[in-house]
Image (tube, rainbow, N blue to C red; front, side):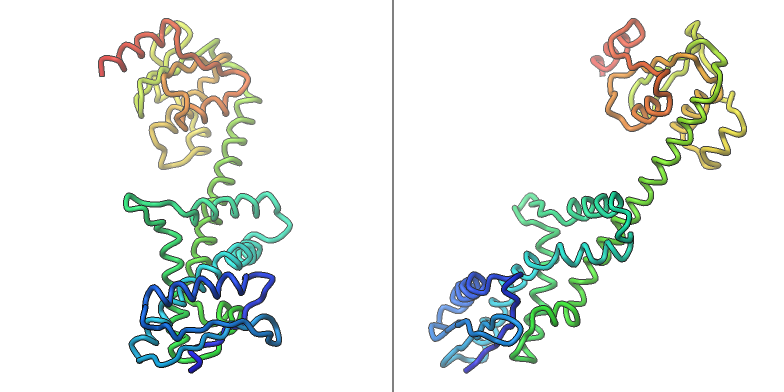
Length: 298
């Protein structure tokens, strides 16, 4: 009896490879299904994969259907997922913003990349594969003919929804990053047009959120010395890092020395970016050496 017939587009799915993968999966799941036959036939619109199974119980048929759904789902993901992601990204971002499209695509690639957990399971890929395989299995339980591209458009709801959600999240991340970069550029311009109010300032980073601000005489700078305009420019709900940045902008040092043992931290990068041209990173001067000793003691 005919278990199912698939219509695949040979430009996107290798019918021979998929047929062999399905055959192997069915035999592994139901060794008694030795009457299984998968053959490729020409069909209007693509290549047909016909699965015939003889002398099989309903239980064996169910197992065969379930087993075949997984390699087919894997082939669909391999053949169509990136194309569908690009379609959703273009809809959200537009086609003219090439940098935005590339940034969102990169974010999606990071999110959806196969990353094995402690048990070796590629969690994010496995979730999408399972959703799509379950949808295929359910469909083949009702119908014997499956047009892969039509199925993906109209019946792969949970899988397609996950792709849409991934794109929406990636777009949000991209928008926030773009707004952040625009904001940093604004602060950078504001610093650029300001005249120096003090000759120099020192940012001493003790680690994490622990900072000390010193003037050119190595005396503490009061963090309350913030220009109201700068406070409003940054945010009403400012963090401690924002206080550091806003204070430095308000006192407008001619030269800024940043002393830290962790220059890779985001707040340090932000300070160096905003005060580009005035800032100098230091990791081993007389101010930094006590920090090194302090970190060693910890």
